[in-house]
Amino acid sequence: GAGVSQSPSNKVTEKGKDVELRCDPISGHTALYWYRQSLGQGLEFLIYFQGNSAPDKSGLPSDRFSAERTGGSVSTLTIQRTQQEDSAVYLCASSPAMGGFGEKLFFGSGTQLSVL
Amino acid sequence: AQKVTQAQTEISVVEKEDVTLDCVYETRDTTYYLFWYKQPPSGELVFLIRRNSFDEQNEISGRYSWNFQKSTSSFNFTITASQVVDSAVYFCALNNYGQNFVFGPGTRLSVLP
Image 1 (spheres, rainbow over the protein chains, first blue to last red):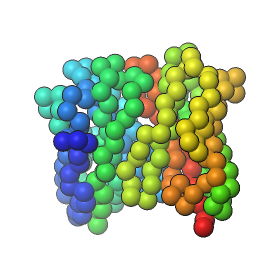
Image 2 (tube, one colour):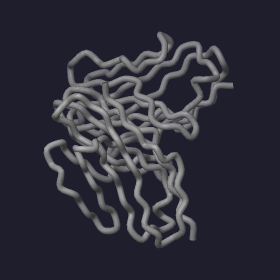
Image 3 (tube, rainbow over the protein chains, first blue to last red):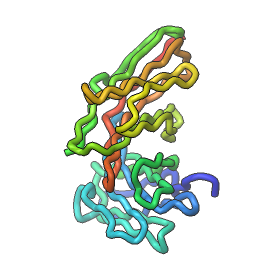
Image 4 (cartoon, each protein chain N blue to C red):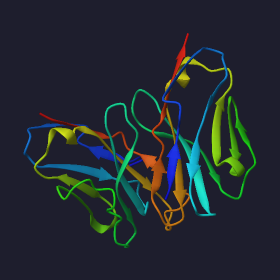
């Protein structure tokens, strides 16, 4: 597609359930980021994939959060046993640079996650 | 450690006023990039500008201008003759070599008609 695509756009789940959020980056982009944005807040870094390198998982808030990127393209962010504090907009961004440095990020529209 | 500070949480101006959004960053690296992004009410972040650490030239793009000063670790953003469509949250970000992007907390700008 022309831009970064995220699905679903909205997800409502019950506390304790697992959720999967999907990100389709721009074709050919080697870097992929996940960020979380709570209501009225800034962007909290979660995880960063760059080519075939080991991902930078330093931002994942707990072991309930995990992410993978298959074939260097599509990424899935999984949240297990969701909690109410997980409610936020989850943003995905991709970048074309092999080094992941200095290239602008292209953002998707985000997935609004609501945990009841 | 990398850090980006945007001290102004919210700013309100009346249309046609000039407004400056402040950004102060911290890094020990000499090679880095700075960015500004706009997040309109629709939610999707839009790239505005990129500046590398070796280029301190100020830049002007239409009503937008950016002032990069390494001596004060600042990368401020000025909107001249603001318009209602400029209402958004603006984020400053830092990207060090080989590392992820660090975003500031954002400044919510409201331009009133």
